Amino acid sequence: MSKEVVYVIDVESGNLRSLENAITYLGYTVQFIRSSTDPALATANKLILPGVGNFGHFVNQFNSRGFVKPVLEHIKAGKSLFGICVGLQTFFKGSEESPSIEGLGLLDMSLSKFDDSTKSVPQIGWNSVTVPTYKDQGKTLYSINPNSRYYFVHSYAALTTPEQIAQLENQGWDLALSKYGEQTFIAAISKDNIFATQFHPEKSGIAGLKLIRSFLQQDKLTTIPEAAHTPSANSSNSTQKIEITPTGLTRRVIACLDVRTNDAGDLVVTKGDQYDVREKSTGGDVRNLGKPVEMAEKYYQQGADEVTFLNITSFRDSPIKDAPMLSVLKLAAQTCFVPLTVGGGIKDIVDPDGTKIPALEVASLYFRAGADKVSIGSDAVVAAEAYYESGGKLTGLTPIETISAAYGVQAVVISVDPKRFYVQDPNSCKFQTFKANTKGPNGEEYCYYKITSQGGRKVHDLGAVELCKACEKLGAGEILLNCIDKDGSNSGYDFELIDQIKGAVSLPVIASSGAGAPVHFEEVFKNTGADAALGAGMFHRGEYTVNDVKVYMREHGLDVRIDDETL
Ligand SMILES: *[C@@H]1O[C@H](CO)[C@@H](O)[C@H](O)[C@H]1NC(C)=O
Ligand SMILES: *[C@@H]1O[C@H](CO)[C@@H](O)[C@H](O)[C@H]1NC(C)=O
View 1 (tube, helix red, strand yellow):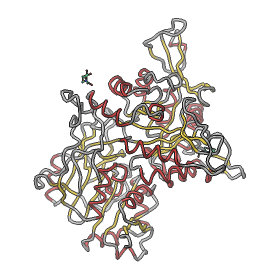
View 2 (cartoon, rainbow, N blue to C red; view 1 turned 45 degrees about the vertical axis):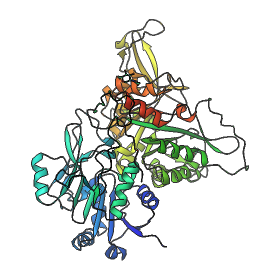
View 3 (tube, rainbow, N blue to C red; view 1 turned 90 degrees about the horizontal axis):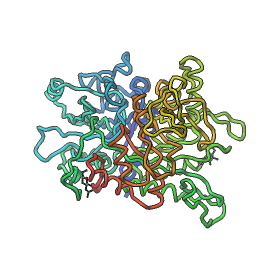
View 4 (cartoon, rainbow, N blue to C red; view 1 turned 120 degrees about the vertical axis):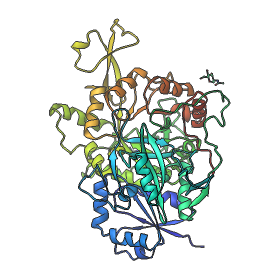
């Protein structure tokens, strides 16, 4: 039997591979519609309009390719339309992000930027979504589960007041709402044949796949599943009250894979020297992609909120298009429906044959392979140094700027490798210092962190705070905060470092380096403002699963996403 074709509008605004993978996983095939002259546009019964990145850029692309008229006709004909993220935003009148650009205006309302005075912007993470309350008891729209969590990543939203909600509902819209901090916004809309979500169902694990399937099967009104996700339902420590974080987001747990080729030519995940990379080669020069891909899938199954792949030999010279990491991502993205990040080698490069490849193009290769974010390390240092040398000028040319302009700030993670230094007199130090909890080797009371590269061997004349601040200005969306002093120590994260960086930027911070046991995850979230925490060796060595960590966290009162639904 041939598979049903699902039509997806592609205005080349970003990576649609994850959506394609999700639809394929559900047993359909995807056909992209890239031009309004495509005859499929008039005959498709169901259309999906996904969008990422900048509102104005997306709407301009949508308009200039002639999609407005056929899509409005599609709606008028009563055929189904599903917008995702900026796709949803396009249904509104406009957005503060691009004031001169008009959306389709199906809803009489515009989008605004989240208030960043008390929370990180963009909102990146897993939030809950309410179901319209006036619906039949026990029924929900397109399988939206108020007990599940969905993955959001955006800076602009349809921020609503109770009056606006009532007004839109009077106009026939069903609204699912979320709260980011104190701000209520529209998470999903539905009216007749139109449906749209601000979150990314293709990145929301099983809950998201179920939602996509409901749309594809035109199951509009579905039964709300059992409240398997209610905090403490599976907890052995049920007296423990589960916190609600100030933002409403869960505490993210990220699994990180350091990937490299071993001597036998096999691709392996490694970590420090505790992982034996020297396996017996089975077939000489055949690259074995199994390991990183299998491990990523395992961590996804265990409940990782995100998987990060780092190329730890990215300093070598070889053609970028042959990088095995591209194949790893392609394969991993077929079965891991959570965000994937890739780092190592995201910079302007010169291929061995002399071809110059700008960082934006390198990043594009990874996005097209299935990455949602790229992590920039060494080039962030170069860009920050140039930023301070020029007295704070933005050239628009650094990889951080070019990639975030094209794919959005949420797609650019800065990987920071700080090392602690002590100082007697904070006034004699040009970097931001703080009073340390433990004194230095010579009784120094103050300390700061300097940026390192090459695994800590090279120390730059740049502070960690200063690097992060410059990168925020340049357009980074998130900080992956390692710590050379803690790396591989299994002794827990460096709270003082995390506090110092959180205090300096409004970007989400991922704590990294030092996790050796579930208690370290509990501690970092209870003692610092970290938005996410990353683990590697403890998972690779099989000492703990991601689920072990999450269950432990939940038992100790922390709000985590445990995706225990079945498709
Ligand atoms: C890492 O980057 C280097 C340099 O581009 C390349 O030789 C190597 O194949 C890459 N590794 C992976 C896993 O892609
Ligand atoms: C239950 O939670 C309390 C409060 O956080 C904690 O002290 C206790 O160790 C927990 N019990 C178990 C069995 O984890």
